[in-house]
Length: 343
Image 1 (tube, rainbow, N blue to C red):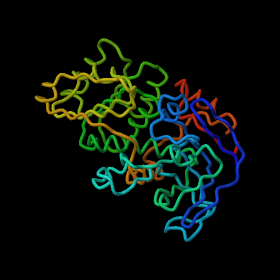
Image 2: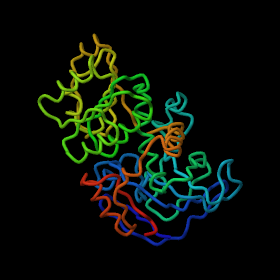
Image 3: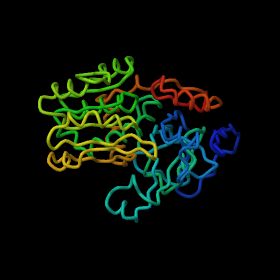
């Protein structure tokens, strides 16, 4: 089999190796699609190395089908079943795990970090992670792979109680921002606004169901405040820039919730007047990765057609062009760029 090995930042090679040998309880997945996200890019370029075990095989957004197991398969799985893979393997014992926050487990492992990820033709799923395999038949492999980032958006929206919102604002209409818009609509938010500087992305945001779409500007916040008729209930920062928040505090309703969703540079700081939080009872909530229950919820939304994602999948390049795929993803000129390990 072939896989893309990252030995150190910017040191990526395509290698031929043996198919992984399965230990008792393990499952072997043939990878059919792997998508790339900002975290992969930061690991690749060296701006993120914490908890990454080099050499590593990147790719935590991937899908494939079961081809072998060393022992009985769990109910719902069989050879040939298409699956998406929840990437986090939590310890189950730390304070985060005990409180149900497996996604921020301090002892966690993850595919693409410590465990070999989806930039490969086959992936060994260790026995302790077989519960992470979520069946998703009837859609393309890339649609199954996009469950992971969508589940991250679902986690964020659950934390800010999107289903209780009348109005929601998404700042940043990259692939994740667009997923937020569609997810909010699928979860029943009546009115959604979106802000992005790129005209093409604003067009996709409108096609995704956003009721108001604007470029950032001096009067953008005022337009949103007027449109919301009482303030925005939920603001989602879907881009890792502090100006995704600061200009829009004036649009927030009493009791509003803010999701700090995107990853930010390590030195980034958000400034907000303390009394604005105090007197308006605003909640500012972080959101990191996703949880297994969200994975199942999103898979169901995609499977039954309530959430359309196919057009958010961008260029898919062959495995031997992985570096080019990473560069394309970093450019922001495409939708969810990925790699086809068999092309």
